Length: 439
Image 1 (spheres, rainbow, N blue to C red):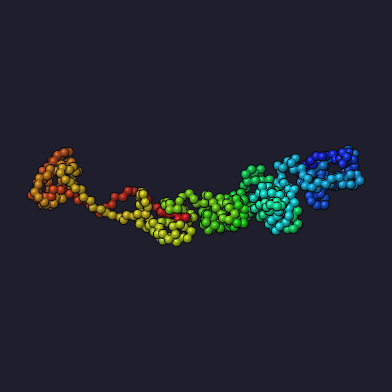
Image 2: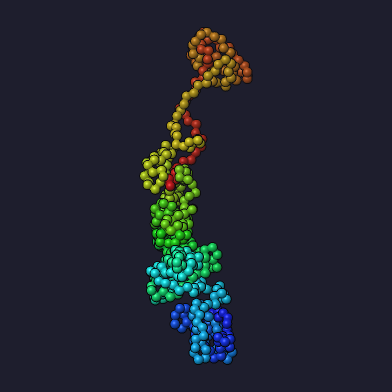
């Protein structure tokens, strides 16, 4: 069945004197040619009319069209009354069930990927729009990648990437897709499922590509071989690491683990992505439970272990630096206004300097150095304290606030408490592997 639309008025024809063209005839051809083209007696296109269509005694006929035509009207004697080219009923037809609309423009062949049409039609033959062309070998389908108009006389030159095949000098007709990326009439994008290594196609524009466990290589087209604004989204749904062969955001052959994805687009020269591994800035450090059973041992793209090694990666802005040795030295991380400053393990001695009357707890050991003879009053919390040296143990009466008088023959005006040891106070902890983002 062929969908047809009613031929625009008139359905009644007249001669130059305004008389009905009784017994006249109407011929229908392909636009710009003398090749006959079928017209119909019904909207479904089931019944073809004779060509020419013979008019009745009132100069009338019921004619249905499919696309564009050249029409030649003659009287009963075969004298041509009028010739009209690129006649179409597209303004009257329903296009809800067709994907391409025939164009009345006469195309001129330039090369296997280019043609021109008269007038400034760059906004009609817009970049990204799907197109159908009739050539010597048959019908081609493709996507417009460039469209520009020149002046004097004004012509529009159109460049197309064809799904298969190429233009030839037999180029005779064009049809444009009714879909646009802004206002699609049919739901897009659709999903492509690939179970093996896959190379991007020009027909993938606007689609989502699922790459399963056996698809470890996704090969990008050259960014300058697709039109400005071409975009596609892909995700690795397989357990194996996948490599996107090409350059995205300036990085070559980026790897993707399971469920990692990217939506990429071309500006006509390069591939870019707004969501490719960009959740953290370069230099971010995270903890990784590397030794947990079942943990994949491959880090995501752009991450390495913080093991103190010299980084050698020309794609990283950190190339050449020594990575922080967090894992090797079992370091804790502490807050600071700057990063990278380290402190070694230490067991530090410390002194408490007491002058005058000072409070201290039960059982503190005091080291009293000899000096001028003085009398000191030392206030104790509870119990007693021991004074090392010749003074021996000095007992204090119990009770908060009680005191004893220490009267050495010679002692310093300062009493010092020395307290150090070999044990380390460390809270409960669990070991993790530190990883750092390098690109």
